[in-house]
Image (tube, rainbow, N blue to C red):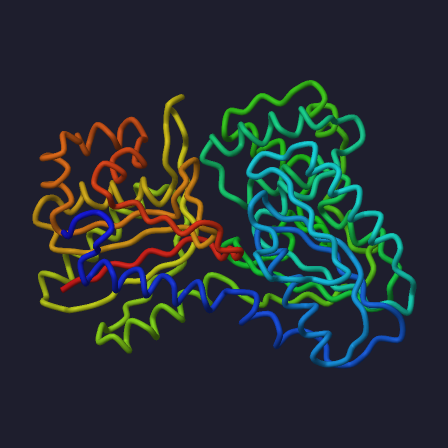
Length: 427
């Protein structure tokens, strides 16, 4: 492979394909088609949360200005560093920033402010709710009897446990006064439009941001079973909240909400497939990936070997989100780095494959990178650099492994989030 900073043609193509997926899920491209074009009787009030929230707010205000829909007011919260870029404006919308993936005091303050904005809606107003991945950590109001520290502790344990995002959000909903429909209960507008960029497999609105405008489909018993399954002992305060015998959250006390998914994993995957075909690579789109990263790597390695054995050229593309159970205190990396390093070892030194795995939000786990790149000579270059591939995988240090080879993929905040993309060029 070329020296760091000078990518080989196959790696450059992989990056272009990844960026095609990002562009398709950019709020500037995917949101306007879902926005109303008629002026409301009252105000347009915007509430929102997620890594794409600032970019979504910019798209909303630009749309309103272009269609003469009147002023916009409201507030959204995004992750630190994911706010407005130089030259951008979202007139009337407060852009707040808070902690992710573990909530902080700013997350609680943002939750309080957005509840206040939601409560200001009058019946004749139109309420636009903008949600995207990351909202669960950014939009926080602990349930009665819980503190921010309680929320932080249980969040850290769930993130390290290997639990799926659906499982994590099931617990979060039961420990929150704003999730599981809590935000919707404050809105008195007769027209409520929820527009979401989905980062969850299956695109269930109750799981995106833990469903602040959606009925909670789970019970406290479901949440407790998840903690038990992953060996997590709740604090006394969390235990008390989950001890309340309650069924699934109903919709009887929620206002009517029209929900739309404006972009999802499929949006990005389809864009990557089209770009691959245009570049002369037959696209092989796999089902959405869930489950452990190493298991996904084994399955994909088997398919790649089969394609190579049959002499079938293909761009193998998948979306979705894997999981990693963190077992080392000094682990550094993310599910995409773990997947890609496991894939390299599964394929061995004669892999003959170029591949990319990256998170569409620009941050893979605890690293500062979106993901990484794999080349046919990754393992041989690693050996020459003194990198023990198997040892680094065992220690969950994929970031160090790919950093030593100059193969980290760093994008910075993308301000969208539609799960991960994995692309392998099999020739």
